[in-house]
Amino acid sequence: MSKLNIYIVEDDPIIAITLESILQKNGYSVCGHADNVDEALTEIKSNKPDLVLVDIQLDGEKDGVDLAENLDMLNKPYLYLTSQTDPHTIKRVKQTRPLGYIVKPFTENGLRSNIEIAWNNYIHDEEFLSFSADNELYKIKQSQILYLKAYDNYCYVITTTRKYLVPKTLKYLSSQLNQEKFVKTHRSYIINLLKVDALCKNVVIINNIEIPISNSRKSTLKQLIQS
Image 1 (tube, helix red, strand yellow):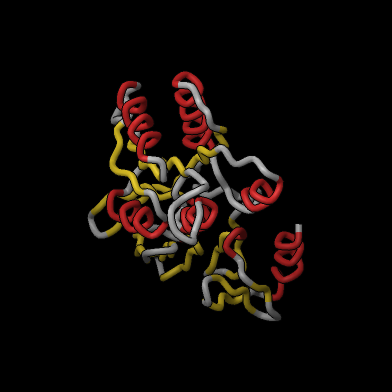
Image 2 (tube, helix red, strand yellow):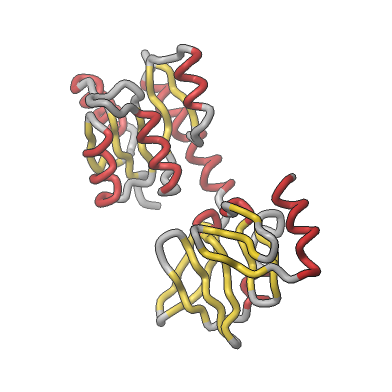
């Protein structure tokens, strides 16, 4: 099993060095670190870490919560590592989706155990869809899928960043999906309920794309989205 690859976002250079040393000592790999949001985002997109440790107080106008909002959009898992526990900060943190919240000062054992537990929960909670396309095998997170569209005996899988043409039917692929999160809106479409931006009279809108709704599915779909 490969090492967990971690990126550090921390504005205190001494803490950053300490974190890197502790992580490497405990068998993790550190692929970089930054002290501000813009640099962190650029390197995270380039270095593709498995996990990000995010301090809230950072250099510049943007803070760790601003970074977390971007990581949520990228579906990149992260842990807060901060000394800030004031009500205003916690209220903002609640609007994001971290794997955990580690309060400074931290201990080596505390840091390691928090990372291990958070990562273990993440990999077991995350669901994937496996398929072949263009003579390549893919295993993508279901949380990245926007919708699926039937195309004859093939099926398009549309994610936040890419469109795959899969030589399988819509019915076949749908059997691999979480039935609580994915629902058929039309005989040719299955959508991710968590990605719906708006529900209109005859269409559902996801990422500015209008997806048709059959008359027989309107009532059920409305109930599912509102629940």
